[in-house]
Length: 116
Image 1 (tube, rainbow, N blue to C red):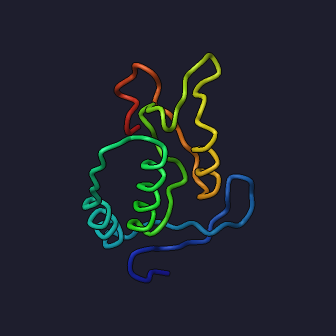
Image 2 (cartoon, rainbow, N blue to C red; image 1 turned 135 degrees about the vertical axis):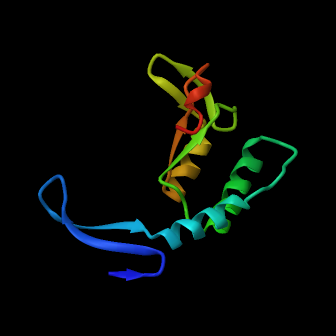
């Protein structure tokens, strides 16, 4: 079934259950690129209140929230790294939980990780 920007199809999932899968049509992909490519905002601070406020603006502009958001280890989000991985700011984790996304910190000193 196709209605504009998304196509859906019933298939069998990896756990042998019936599931409906969705994908963007070419028109839907064009619309997504057009809608997201124009998002720009400039701020004078990278503190926690500014970060949270700008996330909310982005979610409204984009019409939803991504499942995973990638961060370049700034202190409003990532407090430090240790052997177990990133240690996130608890207030930022509460915000992420509220909005239903998972933060993912870039690996330290791995510039190619950004955008993977």
